[in-house]
Length: 232
Image 1 (cartoon, rainbow, N blue to C red):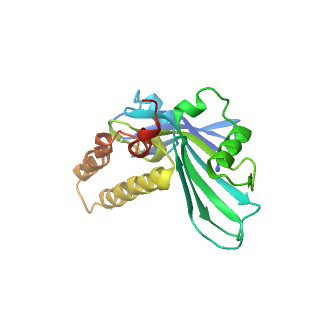
Image 2 (spheres, rainbow, N blue to C red; image 1 turned 60 degrees about the horizontal axis):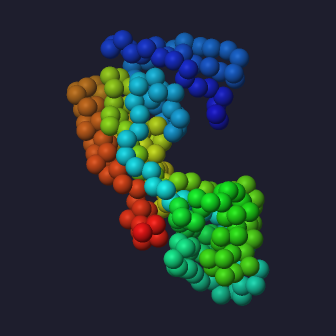
């Protein structure tokens, strides 16, 4: 982690939270706090400790995002979209005149019989676009399943979950990032009001009510667009 610190355990006794931190992987520290905000990612230790699991759906399609170079492309900066029975890829110009961001869906019936790696993804992009592409930066590529999986409760006692700890979303159009930012924005002003005695503690319950509305939208966003590429 960035700050070399992570929560390895905690106890919520109703009045306060006693949390155990591991620092630099070699020492532990115990702290006491009024509230715990868990924004510790999709593999959240805090969420697992609470016994909460994701609900919702995971599509069999794969989302692809990569920065590529079109060797034979002229200086015209244009968006290109390539649709076929094998999925779709869009190329968006970025940076230098021949640099593009490739975004698209790789359907299950295409990838189920191949090993997904940089080589096979690049071959798919080249075939789908009909262009002599190459990756600008190997290792940067993002390849993930299309998901829409929230948790049912974003607040348990004095513990709040936010960001990827509270919902697994595809990176399409920045879903996870934007929802995570909205989580924290929704909660922090309420915490500030309560801590400064400007609002009743009951206002904190609205965080769970408002952010748990996400559980009514469990279908992966991209699946609505990619279903036509699935097996009949």
